Image (tube, rainbow, N blue to C red; front, top):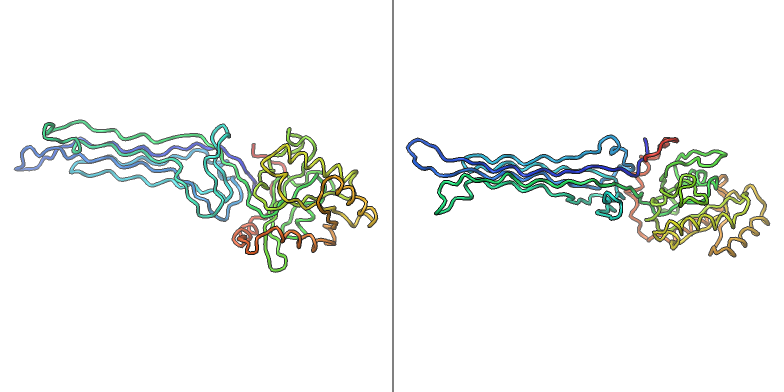
Length: 353
């Protein structure tokens, strides 16, 4: 399954049906008078957030959505049929943006939410509605109101409780494989993760959704590497886990680099609670880990955890800390079931835009 988190689509609601011009003509009835009915209402464009979707890939192959127009009015004062609404189903977490991407027009943060985005046109009046004491045989009618149309962008921001970030090769894929049932690709080279992934963590009778995004490098805000376009998927997280490779050149510098990119991106990411984690403890001795922890504390980290994603060492304490940032009664059971059905490996070399 391809992962697509942005799509541009065209929307057009249905036009109203025209009113009818008709006169009653029956045997033995003279001057029956006007009996043209009104036109029917055009269909609305309606968006609905549904469970079971984690990508906008359907909108890559279908970009034009047009609701049907209302039915024509008819004689004998018959009103035209109203057109059915066109319901467009999107994943939970989808935002609808204006064509210039400057304005958020709708935000779907919970399943079942519906928004009437563009209303259909009203039906036109038939000639029967123009009848008066001075206009006994009107022939005028209305053609029906035109429907609205516009181009919009759909942007998906995955709904997760905890976000996982760090430089490439920090061990994020190994970590998410260790604590969830996700089977993320692991390799001894940078950027093994090319698209965001979700996993469900079960710890001490609690569940929460963990989001892993591709690694950040210096200059990501300007487009270096994969860039920072996937940071939107952790904007809704309650807490961030910042993984740092203990075997890297300079963990403190890695900490500053990633936080610099969060600051450049904005959207309050730098203000979120951040658990700083020295990963790959199995590749270094205890003294080196303690020295790096002191450097990270000096660089601005509040607390530093030391773990090994490969062996599981220290992960219990880290997950305990994560739970302290989550509400007592999490509302992630539905999300957890949804995510587990969508953890198949994503395409490696495909970009949505």
